[in-house]
Image 1 (cartoon, rainbow, N blue to C red):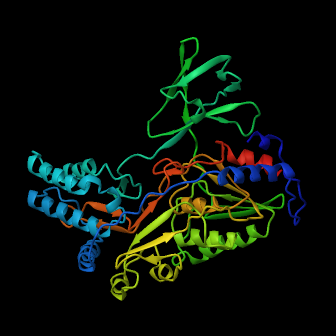
Image 2 (image 1 turned 180 degrees about the vertical axis):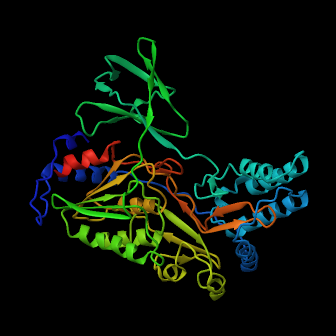
Image 3 (image 1 turned 90 degrees about the vertical axis):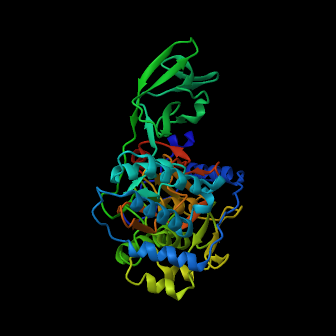
Length: 464
C-alpha cells in the first residue's frame, strides 16, 4: 500500500478530465487481485415456520400500537406480563432475524426470565421493566434493534494514537524499543497499519467497544509504558449532498441514502452522480458519516454505476408477504422505510414461501470496471451505505479508504411499536442479512483497503 506515497493524479484545468497515473492503476489492480484470491462461505439462511394468520395477528398488534403514550409509573404485574407475551409473539412473526438468533430456544428463555423478573422484582415500574427486557435481550447482535430508541449494546469506536511506530526486520518499534504486545494483543499487525501519508511509519488503530483513554505497550526488555489514545473524529456531511469537481475528478459526499419516495429530489440527485462517475476515469465517493436509509437507493446507485445487478457478499432474507394486497391496505396510512411496490418489482427477490423472499447477489468473479473509484468510509458509515460498499467490493479498480464501517449489517429498520400498557418502544426490522465472518462483522463492520484517520489529506494528495 505504500505505493500511494508517490502517487498523484495529474492536475487538470477546469473542464478537463484527470489522467490516472500508472502507479495508481497498479494499486487498484493489486487490490483487485487480492480480492480475487479470497473465497468466503456464507452460512445457511435460517427461517422460522409460520403462518399468514399468525403474521397478520402480530402485524395488527404492531399497527395498533404505533403511537406512544406516557410511560406508566404504576405498571401492574399483569400488564407487564401481557406486554411481554405480546412482544415475543410479535417478534416471532415480524422480526427478520428471529430464526437466526433463536439458537437453543433463546427467545423462549429470555421471555421466561423476564416473566420471572416481573414476579420477583420488589418494585415494578417502567424503568425496572425496561431494564429487565434490555438485560435478557442482550443476545441480539443487531444494531438496528432498539429499546426506547437505544441499541442494546454500545457501538464500537476506532481509537488511534498520535505517535507513530516503525517496522524493522525483527518487528515493530516504538521510540527505538521493540514492541511485543499492545494491551493483550500480540498480533501487532492487527492493530498497527501502514501510514498511507508517510513512508516507513505505522499507526495504531483499534476498533473496540471499550472506553479507552490509554493503552499499555509491552517491550522486549520486559518493560511497559502507558500511551494515551483518542477516538477518531467523525466526518458527517456538511450538506445533504456535497457535489464538486476536484482537479477534473468528480467528488460527492452524501449524508445518507435518501428515501426515493419522501426525498425524491435528493435521491435522484445522488443517483445522477453514478452516471457522472461512470463516465470519468477517476471519482471519489465519500460515505463517511453516511447513516444509511433507503436500501433501494443504494442498490440503484450500484446498478447505474456498475451496469450490473450482480455482486457483493451479502445475502438477504426478507420476511414480508409482498404479493398480499392486504399488506398494502394495512400500510396505506403508514410510512415505511421501503417501497413495497419497488420491492415487488426487484427481479433479485425470489419467493421461498408465503412469507419469505431471498436475494442472492454474490458471485466469485470480479466485475469489470473502468473508473478508478475511491470510496471513503468511517465508523459512522452505516446500514444501507454498508450494503453499497459491499456491492462495490465486487468491482475492479475500487479502493476503500478510512476505517471499518459502523457494522449495522445483520438486521434492518421496519417498525417501531409501543407496547400497549408500558408504552415501551421497540424498534426492529423484517430483514436478515448473512455475511462471512472473515469479511464483515456486526458492530465491527467492513474493513478498508487503506487505513487512515485523515482521508481528506490522503485524497488531496492523490488528486492534487
